[in-house]
Image 1 (cartoon, rainbow, N blue to C red):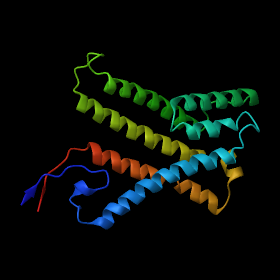
Image 2: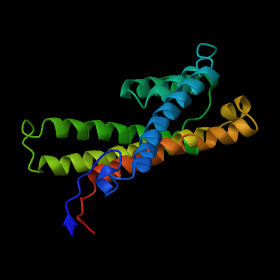
Image 3: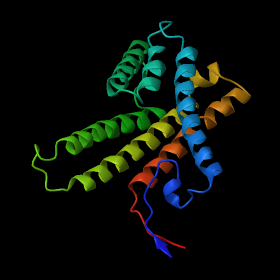
Image 4: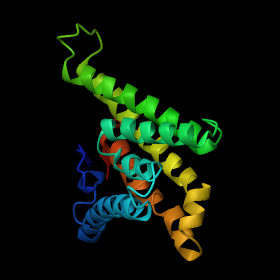
Length: 198
């Protein structure tokens, strides 16, 4: 017996309509990913004690940057100003190079979003479903780059002086959970749907 399977954000499209436990575990994972992301943003903002120095605004703005591109640009501005004031060289760490790469990819992602919204106005030959696939794929790359950038920040002198011991290990693992949930959602939503046989 063959049946068409449609995507569902909670896993029902994977042929598991009868497995209520699976559905609720998926829902719990999505909620936990959102709580984890928000909690990480708030905690980093509190740890940086904004206003105590020029640098202190950098972690605040960059942790909020998942929400807005403008905050990322502002965070970059605070970092550049802090380095210039301290007369320290720029782009000397993996974190800084990954951060610049993430910001560039975020700008590209925003441009892809404009293409998805206005394909006819821009006279594009690529069909909208394919543009959405490219936009989603680029978004996944941006999210994973941002996750790696955040994790690399935890090896910085500032973060290691602020957070120590078991808490440091918890912070190191914290960004990975939302990344896995986001990756799962995007791949389930945009990979080609297949028919299941039973």
